Image: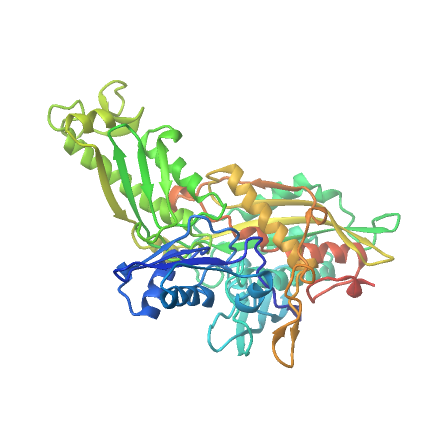
Length: 560
């Protein structure tokens, strides 16, 4: 039985909103939200407005991680206060108020039972347990989704029960379900590996499925074994002593652990507006969010590549509900792929319109001519100089710009294939045998996330998820007064998160193998980093000390 506590969101930038009403009754809200379109429709419902009379603007979100992926009470109260006062009102939550109002991660109790043949092949996987939610905001934290897709087993029983509690609502928190689900499952697999005297990496390789274990569908792209191979080689896994308590440096016990990272691929219909101007510049517009994860950067790269324009000639407008609807939420590691699919169809439509606009006298005219975008315009494929720039076409047509709007199609590929990001988390931990202090001394994450669109932003996301996983494993815990359901440690003084000295250099490698069934061949990277991280730490601590800790966080008292 493995248990995880209640966790709370603690983005450095607390939630804040500004609300103002126009004389004509239109509501404008500036909000630090990941939920631009959702806030718009929710506020319209609360105040009895048509959706077009509500505008939500969120150019600067600050940290989100799921804690800003809903309409919380303070935003609605801010808008109500602005209406009563008949003037703009600003409301910013204190750190304590974030704890009191904003949901976190549910506690969980999970039971994992594994059965294997003598050769290490799984005969049975049982993964069941209980999570909590509230009656007024149901979010069960679906840890039971993870074991359905990771390993081959002759039989499998997966189930989850949910209990209603009268507490602050729980909500999305980076990799909801998968983060706590991988802690239990990957810890149990480590226990089995030691019981059977099989290397933990080899045990996972032995149980790699050919098809999705429960859906029975083909994997769209799965190179987890390759990620493990490359990660083990880079980390020096083969040089690790197999027996627990076998490595020591003075008063420090040293151990290495490993765990699988997993997060599903999501894509949602999205719309974008594309404007190409007579000066040769282009603007992509979508009601998306940029919280520092690199959405704007990647969409500019993508649009520039498809349009044949230099990066400096392309911009991306986002964070405004008056722009075309992108996915209703910036979450689920889905936004980049969802918007990229819409950008692709919008660029294709713009090119068709430009060819028509160019007319019969254009070098682009002709039956069955294949067109490619490069050098700031459209050119006939294979003919270096036969073509026209966007500026030339638009100026000759007497147009200042051309503008198109397109929506991507339904994500049928998600139904046809089993799709996910994968990874192998390798961790080295040092445990002080006198005090129980844990230090993470080395980390390597080896990931299989399809094509990596921007190495700098992707690696930053993967590292950030791992840092959050270190906090989840060793420090973070919301303490509730069980008599009244009140949070007892609503501050960063008492709710502990990792600081720089708690985090080693985190090395990231990735396969960079495109998935031909996803937009740009990419999978999400925002949430995969936290999954498996807590289990890798717990497994490394066991290897160092011989003590198996199944109850997070792993604090000093549990190791003494």
